[in-house]
Image (cartoon, rainbow, N blue to C red; front, side, top):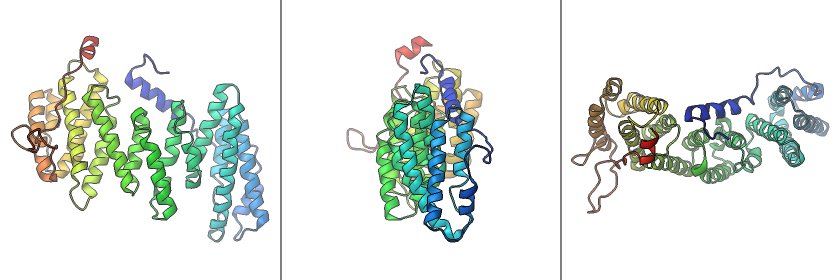
Length: 382
């Protein structure tokens, strides 16, 4: 789909596709009858008839969402549903939420089933995406299974919204409740996301990384580590894309380091190795990388020094000065001082009490893995 498009334009196009599906609308507009459901929302206690009204409202609204072809109308329907997903009366909140959730699962599931026969393909795509955006907006853990069924879809935007709807902050907060059912679901989501890491694009990786850092189960940290290892590997073989993403990943790792009651050598090691590769690629790729890639790398270098390295150690701007001056020698010297070299451990490993594994002779490595020189095809292309 994006063959022949530059990295920057590719992710700009993807972001536009994803965001264009969420339109600013007037929740009060549309052909759906909202009078009965609005009356139910203002009742203090619900009876069976009220539950039927909720069920009918959700059924009709989701069916309209499936039926419409115009994005503006679809978005209006979606907003009408989301504006009425809860009761106005605390005394009826649990009753209302239970019925709304049950009905949402039933009719959104039916909506997905109906897409199998939709033509043309772009209409089917619109309906699936908008059903996923509805799930995302409802922030109902019960609907997570419906979204997880779309995680391996061939369409990138469908995959994006499937991931978004099970990793958004509202869902994450509920998964962190400590309830057994939420813990089980959190583990299930993490396991599903682990299967996506290798083939995911940077937009999806960002969602998964933020979720992994926020969800309060050990498996979340495992997922974050897997993502970091994947990004590190991509640097090692010079296939990394959208280097700006690593600013977010380093931020998440720093959050784990700074919030930990005690040193976490695995997290600290990953932070240091990823940052080292960013520095090394900026230096070794100066004559072969494009202007956009170099700008992304520079942004990660400077922001990480300013916001995270300076907090862990002491305030410093050496990397910023080196980047501004184009002084690659100074940058490598600071790399050695902060992260270590063959002769001594760096300030960061000393402060955070970690090393880079063992040398062949069994001694501790004091230097991060060395980035190989740019491959010949990259040099030739540039």
